[in-house]
Length: 192
Image 1: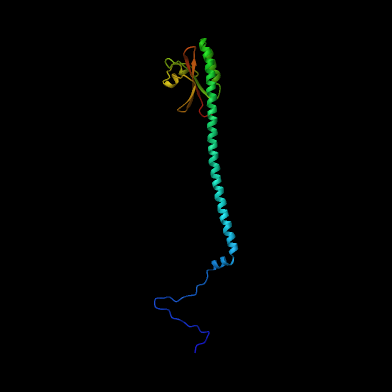
Image 2: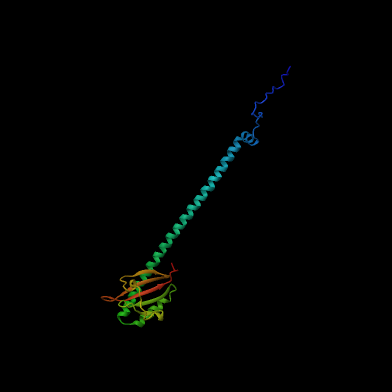
């Protein structure tokens, strides 16, 4: 007779593996026994990931905004600088006009010498609007040469022109009825 404590062994059917009793994984047992701790740990990790991601996105937005503001204010500064240059060119052309009407080219040359002393001014030319010939220049080699750029020779109002690596201020010198000259001031393009 068989004892109650003896287990009845059932032989597996052909092609079947003997069944082993599944033991719970130690990790899942640890998690199950400490549910609150692991829940809080997962919340802490999720919060840290969210915080780091949020900080990174905020930094990127701030950097982009800083670059946009920098570009905007550089453009504003440049436009104010150009407006100041245009005003200077207009005023200077009036001074040159009054001396040209008096046929006092020596005084115009002295005006040029005074203005060229400014660090941002590279060269100053006075051009004959009829033929484009340089009448007076702070660079003696330019005198007598012809300006080929029709925008300069035909200038009717003061404007700033960027060409190659130069910034040109072009201002007509108006007589009583017609243009008597065109003032070309070459300034350093690296100055705002």
